[in-house]
Image (cartoon, rainbow, N blue to C red; front, side):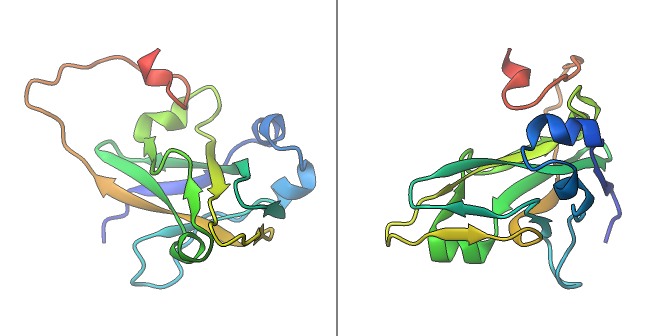
Length: 161
């Protein structure tokens, strides 16, 4: 296995600017971890308790950032069990965290917008410290004639502004 990245907490100030739950939630943040030595995905954990009725959506500030080597991307997916049982979905389907996002003004704060898309009228209850999505690091390539040299500053659509 290649060791190409490191998870870190964002600053308390950055977290508080996006999280209504405050300093107590920040102090309880857990860095993403793999569940087993054979796992590809790093589990991201809930910073606080959350209940979503069918059709409800919430923005989750994870309090986490990822420093990774160039040539890698972190892809985010719902935890399989939550998708299977509740049709929990990431609203952008797959989250893409580029290596240069780490240096953004928001400190590369990874956030996830999730929806309980249950069609069986199931309420989704997520507890603080429970895994809700997983991230997988993947290498990527670029075209031979790629000459991009712009620098990112922001998230959620910032590269198309």
